Length: 509
Image (cartoon, rainbow, N blue to C red; front, side):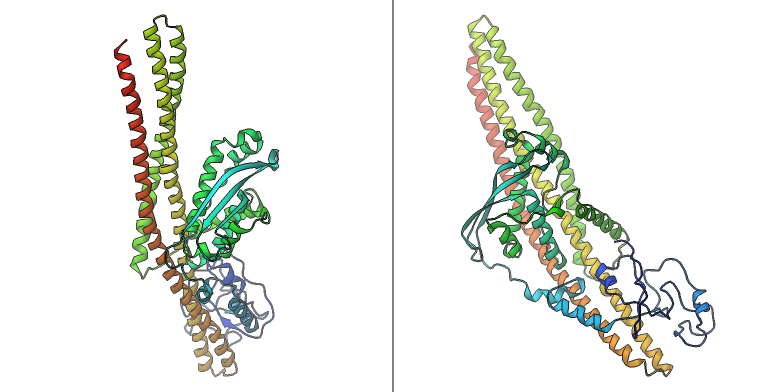
């Protein structure tokens, strides 16, 4: 995340010491940060240097704390954390805190109010349930750069919360992106792993937009996207929480067109902001430090990173194999055509017949090789791509948990400084300020408790999500590998049968 400017100066009758804003502070925490009083020094102004003989903590408006002395100790840049003895004063608007708490209670959750929102979450579906979603019949609507693809979605389910056992709707690609954005916004902050949506390819999309309508249905890109969208929806349907979400049900059941999501455009302002946010998240990750107290998370993160590395190597090998098999397939097709032409020019009837049958054989081998490279791509290749994207979502949840931990720890540091301020006021006999400080301590204590509840809640949810991911991954990997081996053996058996049929004829030449 980017550095945020300190809040502007405004009038306030309440003051409380707060730790300086750190680079990884959340926007919600900064937005709710109190403003400085006009007669207070700016956030950059520090207190008396520790080189002096007296206590380095200097009370504002106290002896020896003139404005000129305070300004003489200003510096550029703020440290991530300060020693407990170094304080600065900012104000907390108690009324604003009450309004913020009311908004949180009404469902406007952030990092520190995550735990409060768990009480309104639906329970996981108990027992077995059936739901099958198919994406079919891609259709191009419009011409030129304004054209877009529409897909037919058919859902068959036994889940009682759905309005009908079977429903059919038509959705465009931006509807899928909007669905993904809304699910992420609602569930990622609670530690849920939302399956990633297929990425938008500007190059392939432009080719589809500018192509003729009659050629779009057979486009290899459209078929790959259709399969990816089908896998995406079925992954959501397998999640016992996401499948019950009203957003997901509306996507599958609403017969009309959904509101067009303009901000889902790849080159829109919102799209650029999302890309910048991703870059900011990566930069924040580089500077994020957390002392892990639960070794389970550290172990799982190591395993996830190792799995990601192996899957990327597998994907590279599969892509090489797919390209080579396509070359072999194209060469076989060319060989079959040339053999057919050669058989027509051969004078010897026996030789001409054998060459003609060989041409037919090579045509069958070409078809089998074509099916095999499709199998390589859609079974092994797409499985590896999907899980690489899912692992990226899991890593984002790890990063989010760290950010919640940082927010919680920052609130604890703030509370320690506020309590230190209370003790100092009492020791200096400034009892008129103590009640206000105690009220602000109550606000900070609530904030600390919310941070701890949020961290505990996301840790619990995320642990459940990772365990579910590992279980489903083992099942899907096994099913995919077995299906791939069966398909490959079937193709090889058919190819062997073709050569065995041709062998007697070749021997009779």
